[in-house]
Length: 297
Image 1: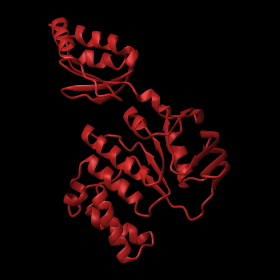
Image 2: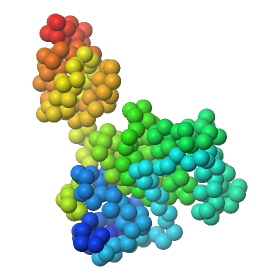
Image 3: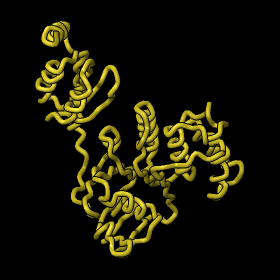
Image 4: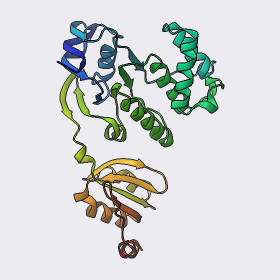
């Protein structure tokens, strides 16, 4: 099919008697971003290894249409080596076949893109998880991949690092690189995914276009909820995902559920700061704010 980068055709993967991936037929196209979701043990990481070519299928075929296409792979964990990012990336680029001048240019460009200039000469064994994950992603981008495969890219990152990583991945996607990523975080899926793939017991049970009209919900900012109420918020009908769990807290909710969720926050002792449709610049009016304070007080 025109525009396809890679196809898996009836692919299965066995580890001894365990069938990790079963009879998967799947395609990724140029410039697409696919988010693979599912519980632990669903087969997400094994599928990513098959897509990246790090593992051979026990059955079925993997077809890459452009034999010159490079594939970048970002594992979930990246070791804090006793190299600086510049040293590590330069030597990795040389191993990948880049000449000295080309390697230096590529490393310099990535350091700029990832806003790592301040840390480029520091040793990575003192880096935070977020900083290491940036270097992890940079090494996958050295060869200008047509396809980038990421295994839980936001795993273990704090909130500022998550938003920073989403911003960088958005820039990479805008440059035309296709992305396949296993994710747990709704924020990452909402920001980048064109398709959402759901896996269960080694099979794909759903593969659908991501309808971005579903993302035109409301932002709700509030503060003052006790910890038990904070846990209950994400179980409410109409809750979509967290933007911040700090002070203030910020969530995205469905518009039609906004009244019920506002009422829950107020009854639980919280105060509402802002309610804003995500596609409009509309805020809670002063009269609404006074009513909120009266109810919460």
